[in-house]
Length: 630
Image (tube, rainbow, N blue to C red; front, side, top):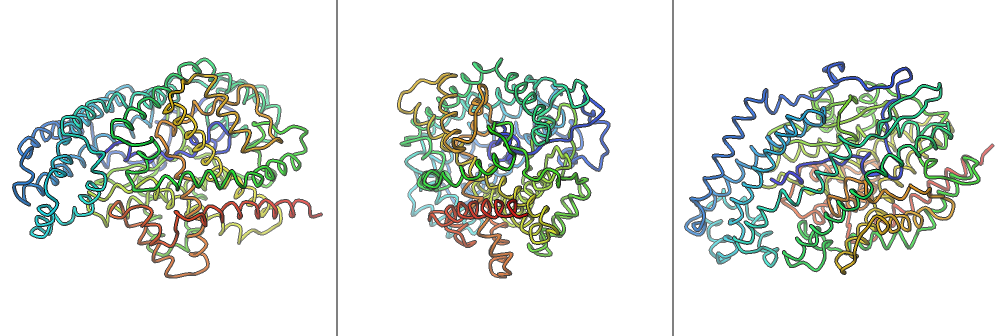
């Protein structure tokens, strides 16, 4: 089990950090520091002890994994001996992967409780190194299987029903045969795994541990230390001078790291290019999508469709500028809701109630699982000093899911909770219904589960809006959600395509190259009505997901799919709901594109993307009309 696949750090905050379009954490009026973890009630904390009750148990499993790695030697060169030999090798791999997952997730969940805790950094480093040994020890399996005559493999599966469970897994190996190297070469690549993770680890340490956003004066003249949560809270506020002051402070705070960030991102691009060439792919895009058998046209068509309809985005920027009454719209104005006077705070308990009401269309069984997850130690709800930023869902095959939040009482965070619980319940249901080999569903389909939750909840709230003002507020949220989850991710994808193709074609990278490339694309998407400040073009170097290589396009395509699925469910289509719930129970035993087709959406066609662009334009027009009414 690859830790990068385990990690559902979908993190709405880190995804759109450069564009100031996401969630915040409450800005305390009378304090300049966050609470310590010990000050937070246990009911708002996740129960990591459900994985390991103490470090001694973690250490025992670490030793068990270490010893188990040596057991693979007995299978090397013997996988063709019998069906039982091949099956037992698979079983050993599954058993050790489950242990590795528990060790890895525990270490990093504990670290995210407080990133200053060096002992959990140490645990994470140890299991990452041991994982590399595990990968090396199992590197022979795929090449050896691929060397066996396919008729022999089929005969094995015909004789052994347990082995037949792995049929799709084996079929997928043969599909990617040309990109599997020799056992010796695979072992070398496995040894290089920790080196390949160096850029993302370095970025996380800068972002979460070393980097300080700075401090600013609040409205009462008090000096406050900025966190990401406070930063976005201010950017959504009505005090424009405070927004500018805070934005300038934060952008300046990044400048001291700018050369390191550019060098680090460049190293990540070179790592990707190395793997692309080593595995004989034509491009990094092809390599990253091929693992899930997704044609590159899915990502390319997404970017092309948005560029063909770019005026739809410009219409929104122009409307916001008009409604806010500014001669010039700046990047620090983008997060301001059009109807801020209707905004209000929701307690965490209110947020749970809203989810329980709004997600009823997904059925009684889904709602039962949702209530269990919200009240059984799955969620770490509140921000504390040193805690990891943003929001994500994570977990292992043997554990219940875990959800990190930095809940701040905004409506954005209510939707973020719905988003992450969508991930969590997808994992929970897949783990209950799939064998381990297929539990690790793709990120591509994962984002459907999360954004469908948001879509159902939002349409519920729009339907039940009690006034024109409330509807304007919710329309504004819907528009900004589509902008952030669909259009911004498409913009990020276009940036990724540009920098990867640049490096693949022999181009050199630098601070100036990254900033200009990002600025040009950023300006194109927003149009002439947005002014991008001097230091507001660094987003390409300080976004976590760029280190996960072609991750973000999945948000846009999945969001388009979820809009179609949610609409069918809300129209009362019982078959659509049944298909969707089956979708939520299916892991990697079906290719993502085929799984979505079975659920009712063909993402290889332009329809889902074009419908989402059309929906965005209609919502902007409706907003314009409502605002213009006297």
